[in-house]
Length: 538
RNA sequence: GCCCCUUUAGCUCAGUCGGUAGAGCAGCGGACUUUUAAUCCGUUGGUCCAGGGUUCGAGCCCCUGAGGGGGCACCA
Image 1 (spheres, rainbow, N blue to C red):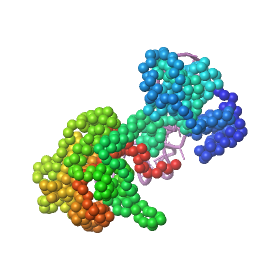
Image 2 (cartoon, rainbow, N blue to C red):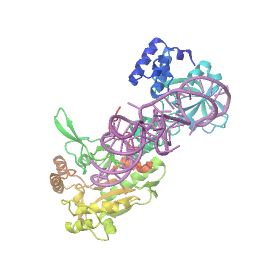
Image 3 (cartoon, rainbow, N blue to C red):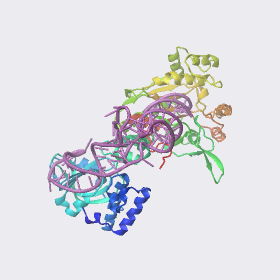
Image 4 (cartoon, rainbow, N blue to C red):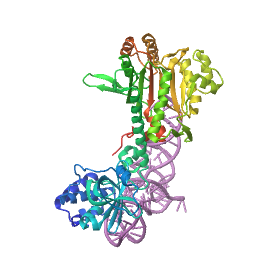
């Protein structure tokens, strides 16, 4: 123990006392009556922080900066392990390295200290010998706390048991952790804390880090695949005058200078198609959209969509792209196309995503489940009766197409475990999709379901401005009749279509849900770093 | 919005019949020159989520509320 620990200067005491009091407004228990140093003898959170802050003060008093500005490392730990990971046990080398990371574990053993240091992708053991670093440095290293960031100069070695290690010659504190780490072995399991304090979750939970690595790999895979196909990545407005392109309630916000109500976007669709009108031919955007709806294991109010639009294509081509994007993302993120799909009941279904995906019309799935042929051209009373028979509640204003969708969702959706393209949605529920070339009541549309979750949605884009206006007017009429999620007439979008949009195939993929599938997690919060939560009470 | 579950030390968790709070880790003191969730000895640490109520006595029973989780509804 260094002399300074027991005998801090008055200035340090003042400093330390201020911090302590600010963190604990009520330090009036008996232990504080004797002296400041007695605050260091407890082991509550406040006392633990106080001890660590005290160490900071000692270091500063000794002229050592505990928060230096930079550290130049020669190797990441991944690189070090790749280079020397196969050394024989008991090897000493002359290879000098400089590595950096966070102290995760510490094992003091007499005149040796072993510590495990981790950087972003790997960890390595530090081997500290009193005989090598000297008494003073050994004592200082012994003062390190779990969680501290350190930079280390040393040589590569392996221990008798074969553990790759850096034999420390010089160790520098890069940043002091003044708050104790969560449990070193069991991590952090309280989900509230995990989501609110994601930093702590990432420090101690390998699974959390892995899920976000998968998410990153999926998104970068998409960018590569799309770049290879000649798609251009664009960014379109988040603040919208009209919240169009999907059926959803928007968030409302306000611009002060323009004194104008604005909506946060609920989809990327209408702006991207304007770019197809403008001749950009192949565009995509990976962007945040916002829907003012409930929160669940599958829904976060803000989530990430990838939408793409391809001129001269139709929905069948877009289905091919969908499959290619997702299969490649699986390879790039988890190294295989074999996944265990976890259904809402928690059962795992092994599945090879690389197998061709089933394509089935929505009306055929409904017929399969009910034994009755259905079609949007049928009278609404007939379909309402069918819905009643299967316990599906209908609202009076719903037409035949909407009722078919409701029956599909109630009866068929839960059986769609393996990747399935559900196609041929009724026109009524697809205001931006082009009518089927063989059936005016259906659209050339598909939704991809995996593990009963909807992952993607695409169609042959409606490019007839007259037809689009009529569809918008139906949406507006439904909205005026009280259906808050229906759309409005977007005059600027219609003007764009009037300039002429080439035949176009479009696609939207829910990136969060795809990341869930490939990461093998059952809650969307596991793939969103900072999910929406109620405010924490401090 | 509704229903169910949950909340105990910094972290992970026990807590029996209602009798006044425990363990492991972390921390602190000590031993140890090849450990690795190091080990061993000693030791500090509690607004039992909050507020009411019942009771001689509440972590435990009752009521209300809050956070979180799951489900339903809504949706992608």
